[in-house]
Length: 256
Image (cartoon, rainbow, N blue to C red; front, top):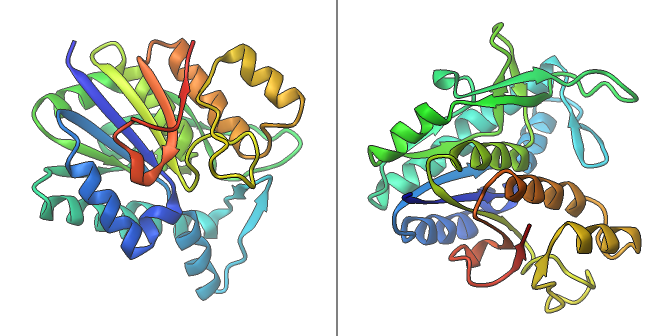
């Protein structure tokens, strides 16, 4: 099967000019088929504040009411996505910006209310791997914003890590997929205050042990859970690393 590199990059990296330019250059240099999934939460929070809309977060996840949904749609699907697309076009990459609603490529269901009502937040139901795969095979590079839809006319704010994992899983039937999660650290750290304490590899057993003893905590837990789900669904490699190391040669390797 042909290979595919799927990069997921956090909002902070694509929202700051210097780190964005570095990312775009490094991403453009990746050979073969590729796909980019991006965040944009800090920009959404900043613009919501400018518009007088309060941003509410629970455990790092955004409560998305109707006003907030308008903001994240403008920011994720517009401002951030199109800046990335334009930057990649300038580097000779034939990028296409997409939300899940475009071509019905990612369908979600509104998250049910349990302890917390997250509002217009989507849990991914399916990814159209055939359509995405056909685009990629034609040399198109999808740039995916963290928005999906429910098929009934409603957009849904959707976690970018989850979009990356679900898309990688769906495409694994057509490509040898390497999924790279990029953020501000060199990888999963044994000591959050020591940048060089990178855990070189993790599997389900070691992850559960390190979570139980508190070594891995907070927002890193759902990121690794998404990575493990991708591996268990047939994704060839998953790496968690810094955005300036998207070549996949360093960081934490997630294994079955």
